Amino acid sequence: MSADLAHIRQIMAEADCLYTDAQVEAAIDQVAEAINGELAESNPVVFCVMNGGLIFAGKLLPKLGFPLELSYLHATRYRSETTGGELFWKAKPEISFIDREVLIIDDILDEGHTLSAIIEFCKHAGATKVHTAVLIDKQHDRKARPDLKANYVGLPCEDRFIFGYGMDYKGYWRNAAGIFAVKGL
Ligand SMILES: O=P(O)(O)OC[C@H]1O[C@H](OP(=O)(O)OP(=O)(O)O)[C@H](O)[C@@H]1O
Ligand SMILES: Nc1nc2[nH]cnc2c(=O)[nH]1
Image (cartoon, rainbow, N blue to C red; front, side, top):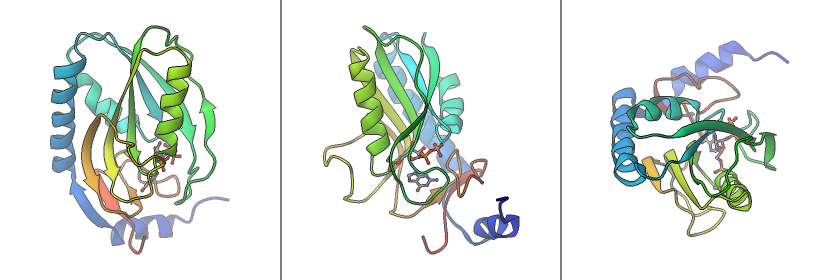
């Protein structure tokens, strides 16, 4: 069924802006500085988690000033919905992880089932160390594991359904220049 574009436009018009474009850009600069300080000698394979990680990875990678290899993987459990379900691998990584450090880049750590599963996958595939970077860490007590944290976090956000900078609302507004929360969610 095609999307109701009037509804999609209304979502943007009524949304609350949690972070402006400039605030997100400043947060990405800080993440880049931290990664440059810690991973410059580690020759990592960097994985962008599609689709949500695309914008964050695209903005972050040119700010990293050391040799790295880039690949992608696609795991989803929201599938254009606003609540998560089973993790579904749309594309598993094809590059070898054996004896490599890995940096996973994703847009959001929410309940963390996605990141947990990806970390386990990388370890089983032979990665020596798995580093994680997320643009947003959603603040609540429903994490998949209580100690689950990303190594690098751009910004915290309140416990609402958000979109923009790679994150979608029903498949739309990944292109929104800022982080927005859906009215009432
Ligand atoms: O911490 P969790 O509760 O597991 O949620 C986080 C995941 O949810 C989103 O992916 P989604 O399944 O929506 O796929 P998409 O990136 O293709 O939109 C997001 O990109 C993260 O990968
Ligand atoms: N777009 C979007 N995807 C998510 N995946 C997990 N949480 C969220 C969220 O708040 N927004």
